[in-house]
Image (cartoon, rainbow, N blue to C red; front, side, top):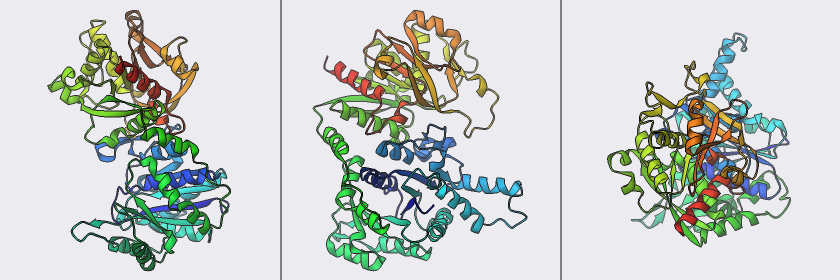
Length: 537
């Protein structure tokens, strides 16, 4: 246990300060110095996972290779560090209590009274050390969701206090992220909220080692000294975190502030090497100096909360940089297309992505969007429900099956071109029961996607219950929409494409979940390239 070092990231003053980005940035900087790193997120809500949460509640539900439905911060971890995470990297209060209650029902506590301390905190600590005990990582960074002082976060904070004691000195560091607000009327940065936040952490028995201070203005030396004095940290352990133009600037900001050096010094570890950040710098250079730009419409159901499509947004950033091009996203609510028109709302865009989603609301608007781009030869990319909408539109307007639909929308449709998967028909529980995680897909030789991937076999991540109905496959193939990606074990259709089109690809899987800074996803890269070509005529 002691060979792995543990970094705990807590937050105070307000939520949404960016603990996930700070954690991912520190992980990237440690990686750049030759260390192996993984990051986990502890969420204080009682849902066992975010899989049943409405996107408006919690933003995107991120899915890992092993089928875990997790917090969107795990997407940041993977995109920054170019690693894969798993079920062990995201733990909720719900899962902690579920595990403890399950053990109690099995009689594993030998008749003892089950309590928050020690049983709940022991289960939290078990999950803290789970990744470190594998012996694969030099560092495990643990982000504690919510704010210090929140009643639901108290067991996690107590578990961190105990964990520090368990592993002994110089094996852990606590980084506390706070806000230093700027009062325009007084023209002053105020430290009092941070002082109170640290005081709450001290009352819980934890002395933060490093303060990371979110701020709109640079921190003067006197402010740093004041924070150090009142919060019991060294002057050089007060780290400035200025608002950034892009989240991908944050690792460079933290490098400049010497956050990594402070962590390594606290843990009495060598730096190993000077950090190798050339690839990251090159990415930022391309990101900030594009030679062209394109306008892509994202047609979705949850566009009021852009975090619902976080991985798609970031994938476009990666693909844009790869193409030396800025991608401007135009957010289109699919319900607006139903009340207005696709032609009016999509006029002037260079490409269209129809986004994932669940339920019947806004579905007809997505179908209308697909019809418009197919007929007008505008590059199209459909993901999950987006692919299913492309199938329905083609069935209605090319195969002339006017009442074709998905049984998600109409259980009595005479032409269920999209239907509930057979194994899903007997499932009652909603949590964790979809087709989740990484599955194999075989690509048709000569297809556009096989040329994009440069291989015949791929693995991609899924999250769905409904699938293409293979009873209609021959009709689609004859009419020009081809199933070019098939799961070899179940024969389920994974990718549909139309060849006589600048770019018309729909995927049942979620390619956005595997795009990283180091490895932009080839489908997004190729889509942006096609959009750029279409724009240039």
